[in-house]
Image (tube, protein in one colour):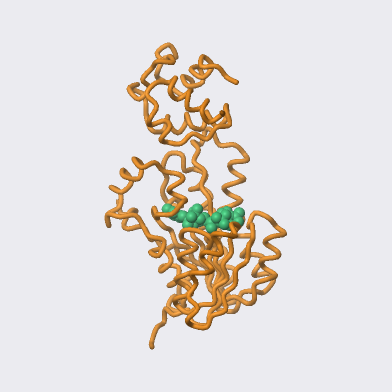
Length: 78
Length: 249
Ligand SMILES: NC(=O)c1ccc[n+]([C@@H]2O[C@H](COP(=O)([O-])OP(=O)(O)OC[C@H]3O[C@@H](n4cnc5c(N)ncnc54)[C@H](OP(=O)(O)O)[C@@H]3O)[C@@H](O)[C@H]2O)c1
């Protein structure tokens, strides 16, 4: 099972112009300049690939921080 | 009564009849006088469609469970259908993925379900001589065959492929008088979109529809009925957009 730290790294990899140092567990990701609905789709695909979990668009929408999203992934795995 | 759009006396096979557009098409075809053969995988939902078919014309409807991804199942479906006047290749799936994350099994699943399944069934029906002279084949494609949005590559690609195959069937079956056409719906309120779009996405999408609503399954069914009926006797290889004006934008 991947840790929160590993999730943060995978999360940051989906961005091109945002430095990985800007993304932590507490980052309010919808506020990032580079944030877009396409990155949202990419995150869903990344979670599917890495965790075998099919997140819904709403899971991304209602998560505030990176950690929130990680917790949603965990909830599906329970 | 004079009605060139009637399906009276025609036998029509409808795939994906256990849900959404296929279910509405089956029911509307029966109301237009057709004998309808409904097929799908989910027995409970297929039975529900079957029970809604209009029997007031004394029609002899039939229900056949079949998985179009399974060759044995397709062969048995083709065995069980009598001679047909029309086929509606409507079964389909969606899988949303950005192109950079698509894997071979995603590609296989969507292209198999949306393109190959319809091609294979139609091909088998032709080979077994189940399609009467002057019969009509209709494919449910999508506006996605012409237009794209993020995450829809697999769906768009498979529907564009399906549409190209439709035109090949139209060319190659024309000397038998068999016609092939496609309908291309915009967003229709069915479980396919309920499972794939969030409430927010739906609200944003609505702004793209000049007629200010999403489709009802019947809106598509009526276009399919036109293409099945003798009213479209001189129409083949065509793509009919049924989208509330979406493609105007
Ligand atoms: N809804 C839209 O906005 C929209 C827009 C454009 C085009 N379309 C197209 O319209 C068609 C119908 O869509 P819908 O919205 O009515 O979808 P739906 O409610 O999800 O129904 C899909 C149907 O396809 C059947 N199906 C899928 N895979 C199958 C397989 N391997 N073997 C047999 N049956 C299979 C399902 O059967 P079971 O349930 O029995 O498994 C179900 O009856 C699809 O081709 C779709 O791509 C839909």
